[in-house]
Image (tube, rainbow over all chains, first blue to last red; front, side, top):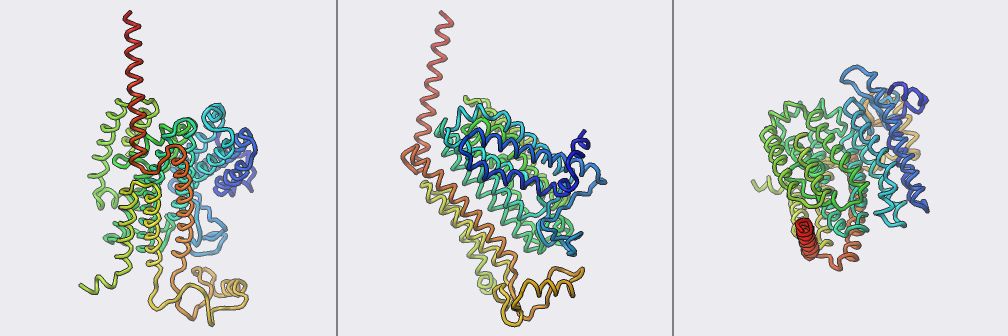
Length: 343
Length: 168
């Protein structure tokens, strides 16, 4: 069925699906910001998420057609091997393989469905004058998450991570019409999230210092040659902590219950399903693909850190969930506990 | 030992700024001061990347002297067509030594991201001032705690009243 749906898209558009995946919501976002009416903003957000969903389906069908382990490599502006004529990737690459395609399908489909059913809750919880901007910010967050999932360049991942995070801080703060505690929750989330992203970029800097490239595919081949390099180990530590802050892994999860409890319902729905999962995807991408299994579990002795943290997180957060009176906070704590089982 | 410390002066500056920025971010109670700490932290990251781009005896990555050609883009494209086939992405042989421009470009992006983060942070701080009347984090926490305790007390009274009505 996916192939049938994908075949309805003309080939010239399907060839550029990775770029259009980002561009369609990105172009509709400022359009939605200038809409006079919240309802028009809602329609534009449905359009943007639907366009991205179609592109994600196209990408899924393209990836299924590839042999095992290979990926769709799309070089922005043609600056890479292939038609570009360069020997190495010179620009930013979007690399879609099986893991990517599933995450993209997840984020786009949840974004689409949440956007369709969002109107009544947005009418109830967000003030009239802000609804168009609310939907514009939602499209920006959606676009940023898709960029994190689709990109194959480490610094580009930071840029998209920050785009989605900034939009998330604004979305959480827009819950202040209902409960003013959303504002300090958004402020704390901003602090923690920016520190996490900055740690990530320091880690990428160490990797760049050790290998000279930012392309994740090249890092896979170049990093094993640097086996004992202290810079690589330091970079690994920074990336792990930075993405752990974004993904709300156990000791670094304290921003999550407040942020999810006081934000508008539509935002909680969308973020709980997607934002932290995309950060975990980025963590998986770095731990397993870029750094490789040997380094992760034997070289860095991560097994002694990840498993105890995961188990502690499950137990501690489940306990805290029992004692909450606010339903949303209970669900937020249990969401953190679930994440521990993923870890 | 002394050379070890002095040679890596810029890295000591990076570590110092990063730690000072982090400390301000989590120890300050005033929300504006927290944002300033965050900015300091991001400045140290910019310094880190620029340190990576340094080449000995090299100058800023702007073509000058013999390397500067009037119609720079066209000549570079010609050079790529003639000499750069299948090679790497440096189409012309340069006379002078330049430092690596890529980290500079990456840090321009990071600075923009930092400015956007500061803007959102300040906007949220303005709204907090409107909603709470203060921008000190401990006073805000105290106010929220009062509200939460009052809510808990109300809930306790409601359940008592419901239980009393049920019993009767």
